[in-house]
Image (cartoon, rainbow, N blue to C red):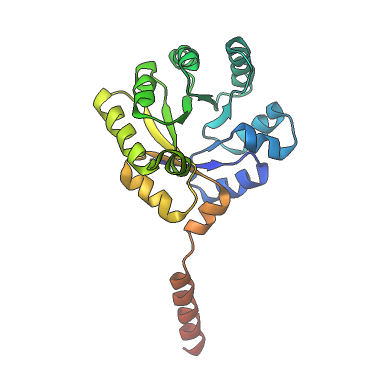
Length: 212
């Protein structure tokens, strides 16, 4: 299992990498837009900060545009990975890139049937939006479990990554539901390391040490 940072900001990446256990970075067009910079520049910087896979999400208007875009970004560094929105048209592109050795994550998967196609295409990841699926379809955690069951039944190397997680509890629930990899923003990563009772206990220890 790997934990990824979901951010396009270099400062976030440096903080996350300093933890020593964050395995990679995922980005998307919304996160890219927040930087106010050119995507090529952002990904180039992130791949220098992070030794693991750094995912860039294709956004070209046509299939041909998206393939050309993929080639441009893959030429940057060896640890560039690609996120591709799940559609019948895009799965063929994903399969071609996966055969060439590219790490591909099919994003915006909202059904276990889509995960099955990811398995057949040999993509590295089928990515579920847990919280968004719950809001729009009823149960993002159940979807995560179904996706994992399909991937296991296929016996492929496709892994279930979960995104759109809004709380520490939702992260844990997604893992228990079958998620193999998790991507979260830096704020949630930090939140998960803290707990009011932990801080209370630390304060008690500090008082005891001071009085010793």
